[in-house]
Amino acid sequence: MTNRLSTAHLIALIVPAALLGGAYVSQYGFGLYPCEMCWWQRYPHFVAIALALIAYAVKGPGRVVLVRLAGIAIIVSGLIGAFHAGVEYGWWEGLTACTTVAASDAVDPLEAIMNAPTVRCDEVAWSLFGISLAGWNFLISVASGIAVLVLSARTGGSRVGKA
Image (cartoon, rainbow, N blue to C red; front, side):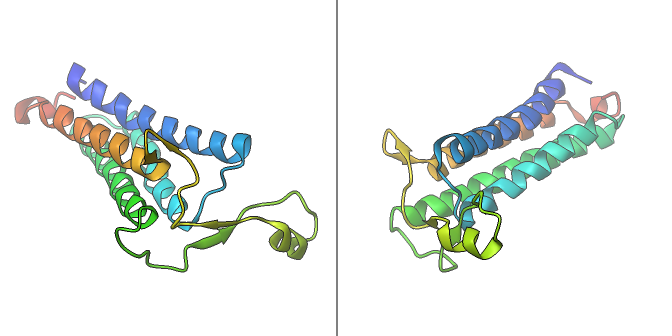
């Protein structure tokens, strides 16, 4: 595997893992429960991690394809984040009622649902420098996904088979 492809591969694994880790720390450590669109942003990161892990077991051009697909999945999460940020800032409406309930420690499922906080997709739960978590996901995911694609493309046509 070339150095550029190795770097792309590492980015395709570490960035979604770090973003998901941050999301779970925010959720379970600080009580920032995810709304429906927050969950939508997590799914492509799960896919990217799976593709990047599988790519370690694949030789040749298949590895390059898997790394590139992981990069695309990361970009998809970022684009969902851009849509979500637009909903949060009132630039457009969301596609759903944008509410969900967070998990509770209650034993009775009905009690858990009734006592769980409601999380709205159209409200900014936390921001840094005026940018919401969805906005940060957009910025980080799109930039890193593009980096994965650029780095993996620079492996060159003749060198792909030697990956």
